[in-house]
Length: 257
Length: 307
Image 1 (cartoon, rainbow over the protein chains, first blue to last red):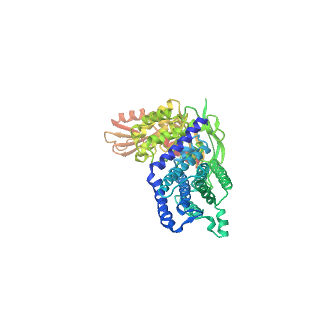
Image 2: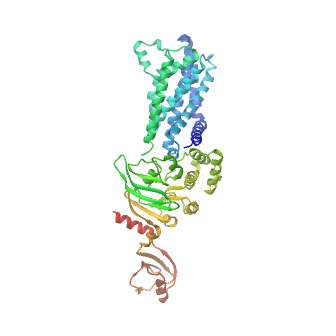
Image 3: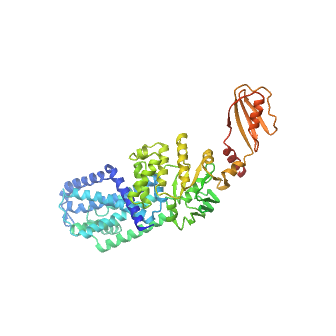
């Protein structure tokens, strides 16, 4: 396929994806904003006042980066898993499979769609957080790059979930039983310094812990993790997940009989 | 003559062990209007699935205009368009967006895509519905939308899987006219159908598939010549006298009721002699029709032969 044709195909998938989540904005953009807004009010404002400082910052300041990252992770994942599974369910994925679009363009298009929603919700949450805390970004490069890379990781994970899913139950199992616990135990609401040694070690095995803390470093300038190590982990995840997706697409897993 | 599609020893065994295709071979020439006939579960849709890469084959090869679909995926996919049996577009999207998106998958620049979209939606009578969500379309409109979508990149080969199933007679006729027109303009067409009349009306060549094997692959003309007898139903304007019979030995007469007669005429015999005998007996014939679909008769005999 010619480069120009590939770009048009990629753009088509991305526009279709953005159009989809924008069309159903009441389901895709509003609920995460309300949920995170409640976190700001209840945990940050009401409970946070009693907690005082966490990791050397006001509790509200401490949880803002984690909550932004949580919204990016959840929405990047859920956009891809629900959209791609919906394509499978309605069989409209066949439109793509019979066309000459290469697998990596299909995958990149859906990742970009997932990132667009993750970043859109992340932006809404960031704007909301300005009503509760004064944010001064300490390192713009780290802040932006960790959000983008994290969004790619979870868009890829959502794609794999969608490939293997056979029912709508299958696309809610991973977010409910895997993703949510990992996010809540990933240092969104607390500093790892509060944990006993064993749970510190367990946290070190949670990839989301590195993503949240690196993002927090970008905004607050303080982190529980080594930033270089965190970026290394993110890149390894992207390479492994992207390769797995391409291999599964080539085999036709969940798509071709 | 260029071969539009060449299938060699195609085998497909599904994961549950079901052998859908048992080594079929088939060639369709460029410009042909080709019918793939067979009962439910014969392997028609699997064959189309393998050609369109939606089904992974077990063994064998498929070439489209001389290029292997496995090794030349991009070129072969540009050359064909597929209209599936079941609706396979998003029910929440607008008609125009569905066609425009498909054009985008083929790398068509937006201006050209918009022109093609309008051209085919107009041809298929859907232009007025362009801004409606696809779920609001009738069954026939959804089928026409799938045809427009398959044609937007103007493929040389169009593959249709049961395109007129569940479509009313008027719409079916208009789709036949449209398909005939695009075939006359050079597009090779392969269709599977349950409507044998459809294959007889439209197609020049035909293959009959049963239990994953090709049991007949010939021209429609040759196939119909194989018929050795036909049954006509005659309606008379006066009562047929009891004991009335035909003089010719190889014609069988059956009086259904006082005004309805069935006449079985052997191959090569003229129907004129039937009229002559009724005229001699002073019986006027008001109407005459073929009792069975001729192709259906042949189709059943081929399947019985295979069984």
